[in-house]
Amino acid sequence: MVISRIVVKNHKPKKQIRRRTRKCKLTVNAPTQQTALSKLLCGDTPSHESGITEVLRHLSDSIDNVVRTVIQMDYTDSAKLALMAPFFARSILELGSTAILARLDPFRLLILRESQKQPDYKIDKSHKSSIRWAGDILADKVTNLWEDKALQNPTRALLGAYFMELVWSPHFELMLDSVQNINGDEWISELRKKDSKRFCSELLSDFTSVYSELSKGIHHEFVIPITATFDESTIRELLRKVVFNISTLGLILSVVDYAANPIATANAAIAYNQIQKMGLF
Image (cartoon, rainbow, N blue to C red; front, side, top):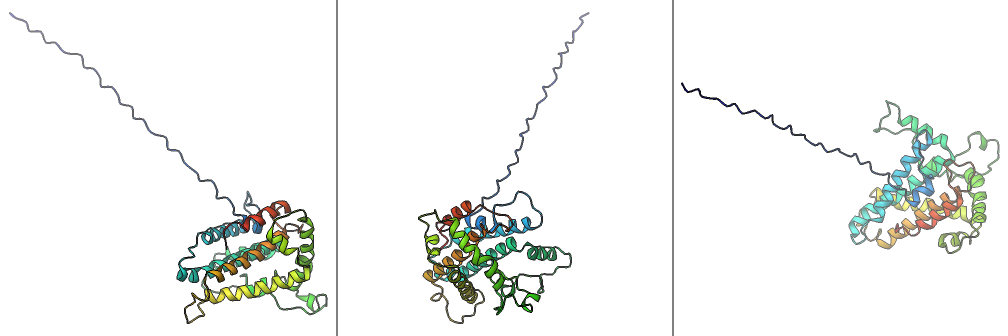
């Protein structure tokens, strides 16, 4: 009898395949660096956000976005330039004015902030809390500042009579004293030719005229082609006037000891000089 042998081969278990999982690294983009203009107008970007610092951070980011757009504008496209440049120029004017007002009169902006945070705040209607050019930036002339009747409801407009008297006029002189050792800055040299009275007069005149000029480009008041009115040289001059005046207020603000989110005068002067070389106009 033949006994057949059945050989059973040992079954080797399959090797377990280890799948290597790649660890995904979460890349967090570093915050965009402030432009010199937003730094001068808003102060350094605050590390925390609460109250007025939240407002200033938002304004700083908005100014930066507009500035970068203006720097990249194509001046060879005359039709697009005439259409868009007045809007961006006035955006710088309005954002800058609001930022400076926020640092000098934080309460005004905190009222607006809280109003806009309310659940029933509607964007399809006018609000009394909104910043208005006539009232918050410019104001009617006050004949006698210290008359009891005038003091019942004194204007707190940024370029109103009281701000001119108590903030811009005295601190303009103080700012010039603080930068007396700075040489080679074209705008500071220009400011040195003025006394405080002339400075305040020209400041008010420039703000009034440039706002009106830019409005005509924004609201499409013209029924004729505007490319001749808002040509390259006109746009550059309007931008220069806007940036010069709003930046000068920022420089003066560096010597106002009660301004919110302060910036040292030396750093403000550096930013002031950098703004002139940014290619904004």
